Image 1 (cartoon, rainbow, N blue to C red):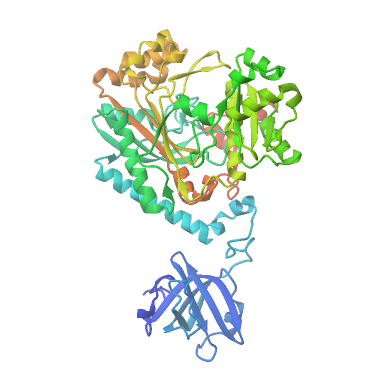
Image 2 (image 1 turned 90 degrees about the vertical axis):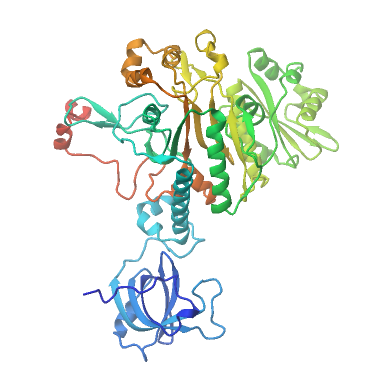
Length: 595
């Protein structure tokens, strides 16, 4: 026997063509209005909202039950579809031409008063409360739209990859711990005491081994795990589109992804792609002009190196920095020349919070220049520097003097701050760019050794292979990153597929032969059995969806995310486990032993 409350239609389905039908709707009470005994209920489900009219004169029901109904009760309502009276139609709802006149009502579930109003899109609710009650937060229209976008985007990705000849292949979640760029999440083994699995930071090694297996074109909607400090665009667990292709060069992989992302932008986003084809920017140029390898190209305001001008001034701060190998660099803030001392100090505070020792400002107006260091810098030198930054009357020049990494990082953030203050970061634009020609290695000051820039399997330019041993800092990488609106949304490379080259790369990074064998001996052995040239990329789907959805944080597009302390506020994970569970996996907490 079917349930008496089984629905015949969803709450977003009814139209004028359904008038005179008897229907059953199930859903949550979105809003309840009592007009002199006649009760109007907006019933909501994932598909939409339908207005239901409960008239005590025509519906035989317990009127006490009707009076008890409140927002978020779950109801089943049966009645006839009727056209709304003239003047009462709602053009903002797809169902707005009709209403259901209830003949019967069942309360399927009652509710406590929710901790926040689910139906007020303008209500500011603390994120901790929303995450604590995430199952309620997900009822809100904004979150349902985000989940729908996530579904459609991932489906579109799968359809595209299938049409391009890729096979979707799942790879294990329990893996061996290897260096991938972040801390692993470790899983102790019960069967093999004292040994651990690692959750995958990415399926990097496995997808390369699939190329050895002859799979040719692999993809996966992969779950990945990294034990790193969360921020707006990071989560301990995240989802990426992972692909690998055999017998390809750099442009082949980039072409597949570029066509995919332009298609996704055209079909799933209301935003406009700024430039087609997607521009390519060498890493060195990005650092020079934008101070970072994730430039937001929706606006200009490029950074300008004024070290040559600065070292010829009498301003000792500038001269000393350049003499010690640092740089002096600045950015123009158009129309900010009349900023108050307090407003300029806000820039200075931001710069210092990012590691700068200070910030020099030069305001340009029709009468001349204004700067706290003008008497030390000199009018002529200040004018030349402001001119190099293309500062015009009404503009403010902001200048940082420090070592290159600090200077670039500070000015990159200041540039974005200026863009935000002046409304230059158009939310309706998608400014994609490829970053290419990265260095293969970077020097790790803490460990006094070379380390990888992208990952330890990235290949060098063929003509730079000899530099891997002789001059590591000059070796260029076949890495490529896709950036959109200042977010890195994907990165990959053509791999070092030759066994001897891969060994050289790891030796250059300071690994001993025994360590190399322990970490990637299985890959080196596989590469001894015939390996095709191959390359791939991993695209951050959470970041992509967040950009398309106009969200500042990927937490807004993940159903059950962790907070910024990597805590699940709904379930209170991570949480303690019993001593018996620890004993099963051969572990003991240090604090317990010391007691």
